[in-house]
Image (cartoon, rainbow, N blue to C red; front, side, top):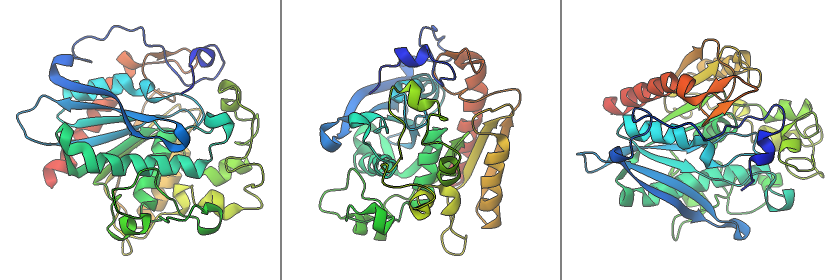
Amino acid sequence: MKNLTFALLTFLVINGCSDIEDSLANNDPNNYVLAEDVVWSSPEGMDLTLDIYTPKSSKSTNPVLIIFHGGGWLINDNSIMDQMSQYLATNSEYVICNVNYRLLSDLNNEVTLDEIVEDAFGAVLWIKNNIEKYGGDKTKIAVTGDSAGAHLSAMIVNSGKALSSKDNYEESLKFNPTWLPPNKTAEQVAKENGLAVQAAILSYGAFNIYEASLDGFETLKNPFWLVSQSRARGVFGNQYSARINPNMYKAVSPIYNIPKQTEKLLPPQYFIVGSEDSVTSPASVKKYIEKLDSHGQKTTYWEYQDRNHAFLDSGSNFFLGSNFIEDAPQAIDRIIGFLDSVFKEE
């Protein structure tokens, strides 16, 4: 994964330092057991890991929350979600899985966006098939993420059945998960609805890759290319573009893949965004929610007043004016409340 030192020195970086000493209210290691750097897959020889926090609970199993970090699909790793994970593990009874996935900038800047989606799908499948060893209930799974992580969570919710064993995304517009259960094909997983989750929390997410690409996401207009020290390029390779190959871009854009309730009932979804978000605006999040609502899907929305982007990230961010200790707990408490309402109803 990328070294974040350069990112910290670059303008408009959505990152954080980790030198804030947590109080026990934010992180009490006595409340959980941590399994660090668990390798769940190694696509093209690159080890992908996750950290698993198991609460010290009187229950034999607990529901599971899977976290996907943000960073524009170009920077950061799961350490940016360490403080969020610690807070959740300290203040709730959920097994927390903080996931690493490939970035566009990895493997000589040749990873494609469909492969990142396949990593997210594979992580969910690995967790479902292994989480009982860590005290998790594989039938009670929620996904969450901020910014790019919210996009990946939305892809799991909307497109978890769009699977194919053939590695021909440009033709099929389907995904082959990075990890599959033993002796099962992607098609079998789709038939069994193996990627189904019971809840999703989407924090200041990006839901329209197609429009973002038309607006310059694949150029130096997007500062994350500079921050990641990578050459700006097409997210599927320079042979494709949103104008010439719109279906490829729309297939990774959750806003174009919302089923009607009569076709597929999506799990309850909780949306969070700062009122002053300069990266993913409240208006863009509301546009996505409005389409979900028009399709009969259940949503809840909370706008965090006077907050910008990335307030769930570890540490502090000078450019965005955020600080985890000051800003994140109120939002995470709402996330815990939402999860409790979902899983207590079951």
